[in-house]
Length: 175
Image 1 (cartoon, rainbow, N blue to C red):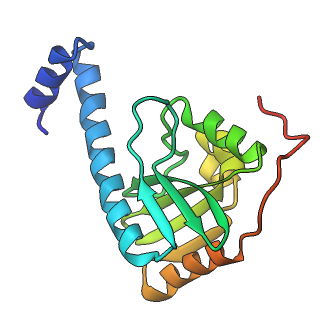
Image 2 (spheres, rainbow, N blue to C red; image 1 turned 90 degrees about the vertical axis):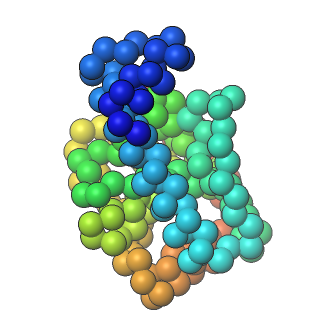
């Protein structure tokens, strides 16, 4: 999508079409393309029992992928950036959704593919609000970091095999 196409799209949808909003729309479009490529890599290289990409327009913050594997099920929020970011670029409702879902006993994870490094970083959903803050990706240690190679994808697959059922967190304070 080029500048004039983004401008036209914003005008047709009745949204603000100032130069700043057009630039934001262009960067959002690029982010979606990177995430779609990441999804294709993930679905090809991570043979979980069940994994489906979900496009939700009815609930803001809903994660990208639902999975079920060896008795465990949950959600994956996919992110893709060229360079390792200072913070995760979530949609506004995503950090709270992930944190609340984790607190309720559900499994949810944030997977960040850093394209230039050819690596995937994995964090638990409970860390979403910290990762959303400036410097968050440097402040919160990922639970797993893999190279996008056959060995790395196997490590990620093994992580899902080692998960045990979770139960609601009673004392998790959601700010």
